[in-house]
Image (cartoon, rainbow, N blue to C red; front, top):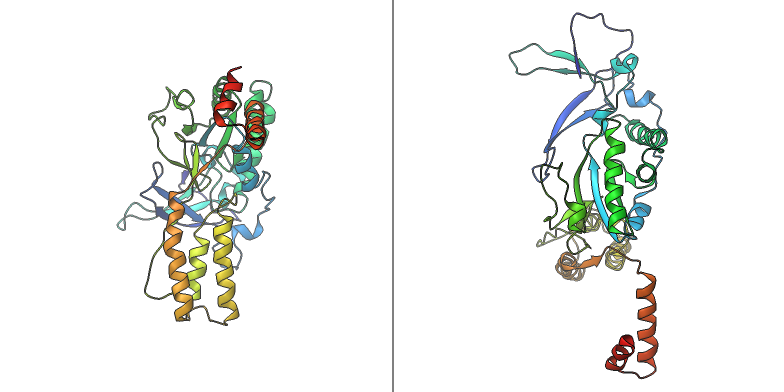
Length: 341
């Protein structure tokens, strides 16, 4: 951002309110600034009210996660401070002003934000459109990575991979190269193979990382499996609002926990039929059933689900042969002997 001094106020300006959000569990950017461009001006209109919003030009989360499960060698990463690397037209920066002072004893100063700012409705589109343009401009130099920028990004998160380790390493290098050409940097690289995880340019090594999060889903790269994390709070009483809140905490974009969530939603339907209000305490029978469900819900944290869902042709044939032989009465020893032949 740029400090403004002794300048005449333009005819049209917008000053955004802002605050900080502190997340100590984050490995990077523990304190993030949030700009509220929906705050109204004295004429009752905000910046977001007058902005165009072209929506997202990328596939939804479900499609991204399904594709991520098809690779033999997979890795995740994100683009470091992606929004801060995309400049806004200087003629429009007067719509991204903030007021700031270092202490209560100093006079406030006026700044203009120079880059795409999180808090404006156009931000997701502008960021994704920039990456799409980058993929078109640099496709001749980075053909594999260009395709990833168009198809394997969800906001600033990268989920991709390849059928062989060599292809995955080339993809990683091309991805770093195409982003570097636009002044962007790939960070927090994590992979299911040590050679793919090792990166001499990184300040820290993710090869020994036991668990990471990708698009809100926990992934153990060393075991190459997904985990579903749920925090359960047991209490002496529950309301219908508490039940809904617990269901909403199960983030499951791929549908891995559909049987569990379905059971919880059926229970919530019963509460609706009982005509309970949101803050009414559950009757004794419903309370016992809800308590039992919550106790069992903690077992979700122990479930490990393989990330990869596709098997090689040889593995498929092998399993088909085993099934046919065992169905015909052959023993495991006979099947093993046939394999040696």
